[in-house]
Amino acid sequence: MLTQVSDPVRMVVRTAGDVRLHTFVSSFTGTNIANATHIVESRNCLVLVDGQFLAPYATAFRAYADGLGKPIDRLYLSHRHPDHWFGLGTAFDDVPVHALAETADFIRDHGEDSLADHWKLGDLLPSRIVVPKEIAAPGEQVVDGVTYLLDRVTETEVDFHLTVKLPELGVCFAQDLLYSGTHLYLTQHLEHWTRVLEELLVSDYDLFLPGHGLPADKNEVARNIEYLAAARQAISDGLTGDAFKEFLLRRYPERRCPGIFDIYLPRLFGDSRDY
Image 1 (cartoon, rainbow, N blue to C red):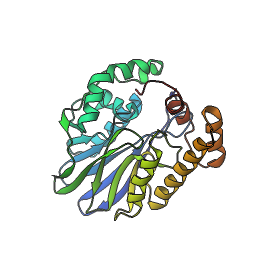
Image 2 (image 1 turned 45 degrees about the vertical axis):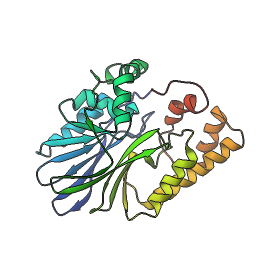
Image 3 (image 1 turned 30 degrees about the horizontal axis):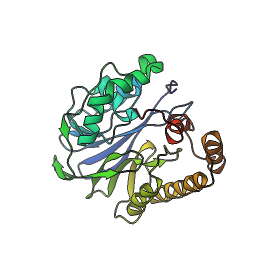
């Protein structure tokens, strides 16, 4: 399980007028999976994207946001995987959380089950479950003069995924549509996921903020497409379980966070619950 805690990475990734974008990435070491969360700092407030996984990182992310000295207007939650919303119960239970209806429903119906399934994490777990109360509908929102484009993407790394884009800054919060420098969490939807990434590749955006790893450009989008193609071929060739894992580890020795294989392989090739 993900138990090693060390210093996160904090950085300003883009500045444009009154807007600064911040990225906060948890540890790449041990069995951690480098969860990446982000802050849009505008003149008067902050907008956050995702809430971290392990309690110490969620607390540190909140401290980083509070250190900017501006109120948090909202937090956009990208999807239902617990490494993105467990931290809400640790450090963001006072913040309005906006999520797709399907994500909010899942956390309401299965949040306690997910918490119970991760019991081995002990005091790294949140103290409570926070169910998003604000529904993020696809379309345009303006917060403190910044335009946000929200989109509902289906059947990629997860069944329902919220993307957040800042068209005026050329920035796409891709979250788990894109893994930057780390191994990907794979699902049954590799072909459709590839098509979604191909659309990003020809888009007008030039900065992609992932759910795992460091900020990326279109080169990393292309590398993710190639990774998905390799995984599809391996599955077509009959590789499963440890053989599948070893194939991807050998093919991509530069990619970090191999602990993610142990999380998704029981779901990709078995019948483990998707909590």
